[in-house]
Length: 87
Image 1 (cartoon, rainbow, N blue to C red):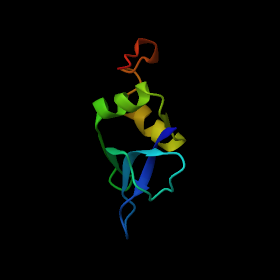
Image 2 (image 1 turned 120 degrees about the vertical axis):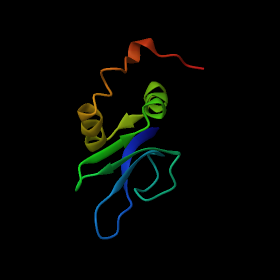
Image 3 (image 1 turned 180 degrees about the vertical axis):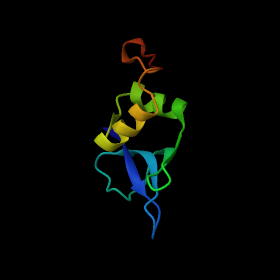
């Protein structure tokens, strides 16, 4: 199972990447793909929306924090799981 979760990058200041990762991997483990960036101090967010949709359509589950970030960015308004296309 794949999850969308945060991976810490900053040493002094907390800066996170939003990544798609296998559930069995640890937080700092090898990711499948980087799909976004989140800076809580400067309140900046960059999201690769097509990549996020790709993983959500295939059953990836976002963690609570990532789900809150996606809701603030209004990503779920565009995503409709009933209209999935599986290749």
